Length: 143
Ligand SMILES: [Zn+2]
Image 1 (tube, rainbow, N blue to C red):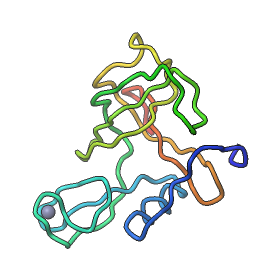
Image 2: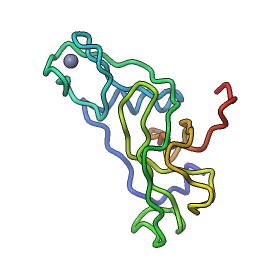
Image 3: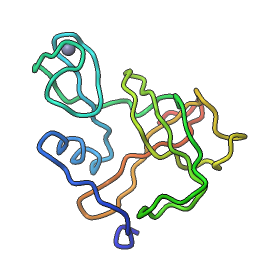
Image 4: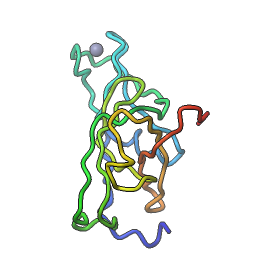
């Protein structure tokens, strides 16, 4: 599967490399400020809340809720995804929101709902890069 991926491939930078390295290990990392305790995403060296540089990477639970979404009825140019598909903003349990592909659900408003519980899963696209994506989660699921 990894060998057949034809879409654009993320290029890790010094600031995002821990995120991509962790994804490879099936972990979702976000950053947390040691001064004001706020979790945040996307990766950056300054806390967006208090501008402290005293920040650290921490593992997120991988659970959250679908804050909002859009159903695209055209395939995304250059990405190997068939329309219709769901792009969502997930609000993690820790607070940060991230833009992501919502998979594992029919791209139909009948099945995709704001506030529905979601969980991260990981898709290897190359030897080096693994993409975190999200899918619906049943409230009782352990993982
Ligand atoms: Zn802070």
